[in-house]
Image (cartoon, rainbow, N blue to C red; front, side, top):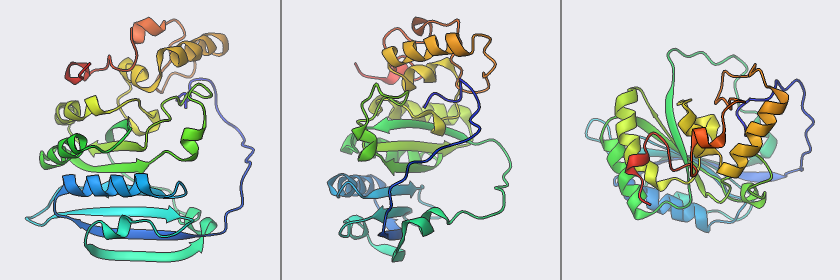
Length: 267
């Protein structure tokens, strides 16, 4: 969770749990009212058993048609309520092995052009206020789509000071994809007040402000002390850089609420 500031991983040892068959669902649903859909999906995820993982992609309405929501969900217990929250355009629901889900990536390298632009934040709950702001952001045209991932579960079982990834009470991780830095910044400013924390892997803005979003002051101080100890020459700097000669106060004086979009935050 520290953004590659300390070295290069050359090997991994995995400790795994055996998982039997699971339910796998790929649903395409009508999101006539995107704000209402977000509320219903968020409530379904939070009320489901903790073995549910659900990822949602929601884009804006196109060509006079309602918005389309696509969710991919895995569950080991009884069926969650995700399928019943809105009419279905299409569905693929099956009982399969967990291994088959994890092995669905193609064998050829990913090929793409251009640089992605993404902003991200961790969200405790999908409230009516957040849902309305997210729907307005989609309608603006500045955001191509949202990807919202359920968190909670085992992630929240880990103490917040055990790793660099500290904001573990969030139920959702929100990412917005777009193309125009200025338009994205303007729209993201309306959403930023709802977030508490950031997981850096889904953010493309590498300014020092984002370090204050990702790490509470005590965590940031620990990371910078380690950076000074193990990489004092800042060899590993092409990332969300923890400069070894910067104090936590140089990044933020009171935590993650002092970012680029801080003027929009309520206190």
